[in-house]
Length: 251
Image (cartoon, rainbow, N blue to C red):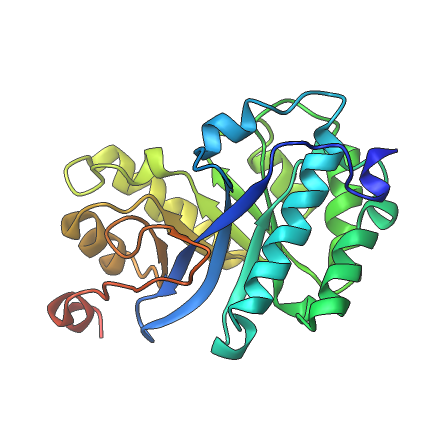
């Protein structure tokens, strides 16, 4: 199988890192690794090159590239986690397909307990397969996250079977939340549910101070979006921390 060694994906790639920040403590909780082409290609162009014959290889080279770059940037020394997206359909057996990841972490000295594996339910897939992956990763010391919650296939059904460390609310729920009372109601109740389950919520796609203010009023600490920081190519980048007035409102 291709995922044993990560060979077979011909397009050279690199990573941009976008912070997930804790606005209460003004610290970076994690950096999400976002794939880019070495030739300047955006994520969409890179992802368009994925097919069944190279899916395993692409998934593996993304993991190892993210870890190697993060280690070179001394990410772990900042206290931040590294968040890596993975393709569930590229993992035929979790413990076999994790070998290259563990080797990269050992080779670079990047701590396994600082790695978050996040996935998006972008296509229908076998729930038992996903559960096997998530439970295996947790047993090996990795953190787990569901991305784009509210836009995927399983959603609440998956949460009844497995509670990940983190759930990232889809940006469609966040966009214009300051002017949309329906979205505020949905997000408020979703946040309460996640907290009751012991799951850390992250709100992503924040682009305006008004959206940020509403989320602060709802008690959200972990945020991600262009308002706070854009992805930085092969760098950790700078964070535009929230206004002091916003923080004081919920202190």
